[in-house]
Image (cartoon, rainbow, N blue to C red; front, side, top):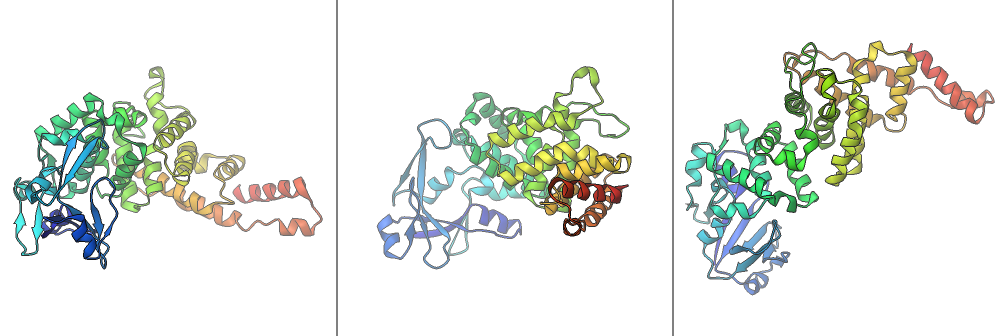
Length: 401
């Protein structure tokens, strides 16, 4: 029996990155031997066990064979005769196909260390194309490792394009697409994930609402970067500099979806793109079963970000309509998230990256002031029902002038 650390932990250690989780492979063992040592079996499709003390995952060495469509279409073979090299062969990238055994020696049959040194993301074998989820994983690794200037190998990029053309991505479940996207959103260079998917045609299949933004012009006065898709990626970067909150990041991605359906005759202007984008945000969120709270923020940002930007141009009635529409009285914290996305939207423009955004303080000041308005005093005056509601609205208006 031989136990080795495998995959991401080995890769991240060689890159001097923090190791967040450790996965182990066990060669030459049977399930019975693992159970006898106190491990708890959790895998259904293949034998995976939890260590009795650390709770880390230990998987028996295995091989895989493609039998159907999608990432579920595999049969796994686990047996004491399966070698470490055979187990590593089934992995996606060479930099993830290394192992470190108890003696400290790195087992690297596919030159992962060389690709680490050369900053290359390269698939291990043609079997890469059997699992469509790997298209998203490579895009995510490109985002995660962008700080080290990793590039996708030409042959791997070509293979990913071929996988997209084959239609294999349609077999991905919404949950897996969302899971990979969430992980990508929390990387420092999250825009790279969407750039890669767009370049190979995957974004057009998975998120056409986002893909449609590319090559759509905007008014140069407000958007020197021009392209609406480029602007969206810049907003993502600006948002990530402020937070790693998935709800804010997803809202940043979705905030301008309406620009993708602006009639050509109106370009480069995008009148009412906020309202036009709302059904697109809902459709995208529904497709990937996005959590309700995340969807709610994305829809609100899409609808109201234009008005938030124009704070000083609005009448008191319009300002109150924004606050009512955002349901700030019941969910003030969500409104603060919305304001952060608007900040990122403002700074996600060429030449505006460090510009101040006074609207943030203005809206927060109004919210703080209006939060002091209470029904209690009007009740003491003898008002009831709709009269109380009107009195509250009138007092709030007076504070917004």
